[in-house]
Length: 556
Image (cartoon, rainbow, N blue to C red; front, side, top):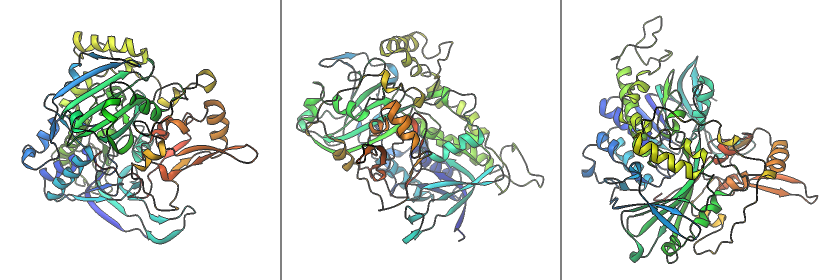
């Protein structure tokens, strides 16, 4: 059966802040460009999760009159607190300069993306939510488009009555804005060796809850971050608590996925954090209304891959532009999309010399021509985005020395060298290589849930509004379904996937003879991608589920 095919000037994979900013900027530069943005979520913003505090620098450049366009930026930051926690006490520390939030806004990133999508559509950009990009189209060595996944197929591969075949979306250039650990982006890294000669990437897992709290406890615009307890001093992580909107509290916890103890459970660490005497009073009379989790890309400047290849480029969190020290990445994601758009526009219009021309002298962008937008990384390095990341490049890798040494180094790097130390610290191994064997680690005894402040995992997953069509194909793939999950993951690492997954997807079940097997509850998956990152043998491969399935976050 021949697939339907559609042609565009530019196809953008992912309707997050990076992809939407790229689409808007391209349309601003030339209203005649035929631009398509696709997203795997049922609606724009449904898979978006972030703290989030927005630094509006990129937004000011992209839409200078945004304040007149009714954006969802209603809570300016009024207070910054940086807290060191012990089990029972809290100590306020000086807020590092990078974490100052004067002029910033507490937002729902999902709502911001919905608003950005509206701005893009006003400019004529085509936006198609509910379509997961599952395959890249190559012509020779050049990316020439993507294929969206089929819908309505059962696990045996047979079409059902609601079958909908995927579509070929072909383009002169494809922009990959898939966010952290994008599945197609990972294949591009391998095909074009884009990660050759750079540091391994490192990630964090962020868990978040949205609460309604009593008016008397709500401090609109208050921002708090904490470090230390409940984590030990060798494990990177910390919390956030943002007061915004009408009596809303965005509260969450981030744990670096380079942790070593396979018994560590990020979800339970988050629940334990909420019992701290500083936090409990905020929540005791509140109402939890949403839950979600998502991985963050934390490697910084040292881990940014080669960003271009014939026929396309990578932007946003897919590339790794999060500023870990600021605990912000939205502004950089947007800026990368804008710089990409400006670079591509110049190339597509023939305003810059082409890196390669066909023997027929075809115009830039003609199908079949191998072209690469080399101006994009060059212009990024000349932008404030690169300077933003350069100044903090040593903060995250310093945490391999432990919390106390890292804080001391961060003070030295920030106040003495002002981000311009004559050296660069490095990440030495990927997160999945950091786990120790279970026999070398202690088990962690987590307290029982009280169903007032702390909750069991199924009740939390319920609040993520997860939805999958019954019997759709498994999107969580195992390279080895039998030996590795038991002989290695269970026997050597005590099945860490049953703990690092924040949605209860993975379980070890035993039959009547007490023989174990790995059960995958794919209908629980909230697309965080921690399994794809942390599995010790990289046996688990995350791929997109059917378009429109997965979590449906509200206000997250």
